[in-house]
Length: 85
Length: 286
Image 1 (cartoon, rainbow over the protein chains, first blue to last red):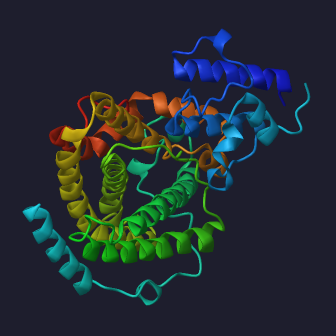
Image 2 (cartoon, rainbow over the protein chains, first blue to last red):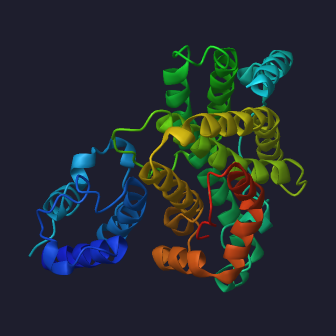
């Protein structure tokens, strides 16, 4: 199990790699990645797969609200409640 | 428009002629023999890869069962969104000509879910979860309809190639062959409708769009085809089939040349259609 710090870094790396335009220094843990279209709805599928891999738990997108992916803070809160920093 | 009107009448008549009761048409066996093929081996997502070749025949057949559950699960999720979108468009202003067929489309999609859901619930005890989400946003006139029906078409074209091949594959468990056959029979009508409607909508609305909207639609459709294929490579399937490191297998499978060639072959007709209509101007990354 990765620590919360490692998970946050993995998420930052994935967002920067996926978006291709955003610079790492412009991405904070409270940057709204959906609202600012940094991540598209189709790319969210890859994010869900990555979260499943990191958390070891399946995710059902049907029961989730887009707010669950609002920013890195929300993702950690919604999918990694038990991880420790 | 005239071609679409004539096709709608013909398709409605065909749907009335082929009307069936999904609860009596299919006989569900007590169990499915997972020592038989549930998916045609050539259509298994890992076919041709080293990891697949390393499996015993029994393990390959076990994998083929979970691949079938995934295929049917994808169909359930795809058809749920389709039903929702079709219901919203029924009798909407401007849709008078196509509404009679939307009634049949809705009815037939619901019946398909009876088959797909019936199989998953009876023999696997589950449906694999959906990983797709759509965000609300504002659209240019006609953009949402073009995207909705073009996405339906892509999804159904890829599914239909699988259905056609598996409906004829005598190696498969009979109930799976039958479900594929029944789905293909209805889908061939839905596809005929979809091809005409998408072309009609795109020709009607795209000249009114800004360059930015048109480019956005093209980019989205290209990415949608890539995303649709990714769902056929489900780590949960590999895990259920007993394979180690399912997420690594999925990543490797999406990069393998042998599976890329498979995706190109299956999607060729659909991509050609999108290029011919002008919806795509470049090939998607497969």
